[in-house]
Length: 555
Image (cartoon, rainbow, N blue to C red):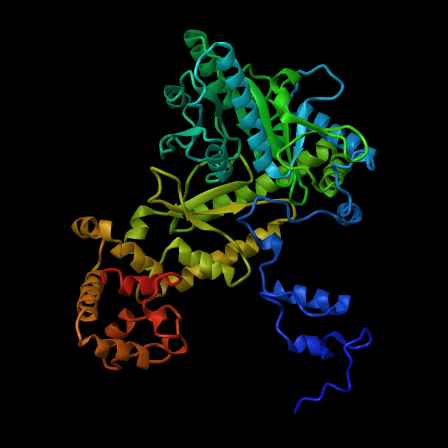
């Protein structure tokens, strides 16, 4: 019996005693009236309550831990808009200091007091600014020579981060991809040069490839490019995408030449919110000198109270991340950054070595050069395994871990891998807990009597069935399974199909259609999906359930 008269929902009402907590959160329309801040906070908080803890997210590269003072400092600046330099002039100065520090970490040869660079919201914007600068320089030169400038291109490995695909699409610049292979796991300079021509605006090596964690050899590329430019008369530059490595290499590998020490490296971009150790979103881009930053990229406005010149795709942007970055520079210093990155690398190497000891796995690379690495199932093990890395990801997620399983890029897309990214805030004890959960998950998966849905999906992929059958990759259970699917496909196109459909829908829980025939029951296993609890269309809709897709693959 409803009786809401005794409570008014005012500030004195307990949050969970409020009538507002009996109502669903808004989906389509803004609520009619206000509520208390306590209730609003709780409703928003509850929306994210069941999510994975950020520090257990080993898929992301972004910082998930900063100390209390850094957090306090950033929270206090959350209402400051960096672009308002008239109102917040010291923020602009602090930004310039950060650019100086970053540029000098990369051995900038620039003699000016203030180095040439720009703030960005993440390395995506920073990459685009570096790419746009290269394009504008190339275009200006082509115009001066009276040559066409309508077919620009850039060269990068297939290990690129999605920002480069965005850059190519948005600016209509052809992206020429150098394939990665098991033999050539990083950008091959000679193969890259084969794709270059007079319309190439730049070559983009990557320091800390998202897919693999490896580094392209920028020094080798620079040497090869120098000879190529001398031979052709071109002046193709290098933009280094150092989203991860830009804050690792200076501290752990100071003697490695990948930065402005190299002749053709004219710009470098990095994520401050990755191994720069700042909460998202923050990026930096620096140029070798002012002459490499086209004037067309600087925009001035006077409607904020003074003449303000800015380089960036975005206008308004938070100042809190600048304070966070400057705080980390002061708090940690060079030695502090070195210690943090070293510990992250050592923990990554520890997990890498322990993974190598596990029977099902093989590491993609013998060396760990950044605090991240990938591994995959041994081919021989995978032939008879009843599970995939997607199943392992699912098992680990039940313990709060986010360890992604994904396919490698073009030419390596048959390889499903897993990746661990170790960041500040990930301890040795947490590494041991992760390894323990991986071992426990393997034990559970190896006890399976029949293949998982994701394993079935691998088996019956249309274009691979015949090949797998010939090579002996399909075991008898899978062959029988495929035959059953074709029978189901036939019945689906005949009036008698209703009988089988009813059998599917009438069974609860484990879908035990014929109690006396255990094998048939397992063939109809729908991966924890209760068909009775769903509308009819769910049985035949493949959009969200891979195992259901199997049943209607050929219908």
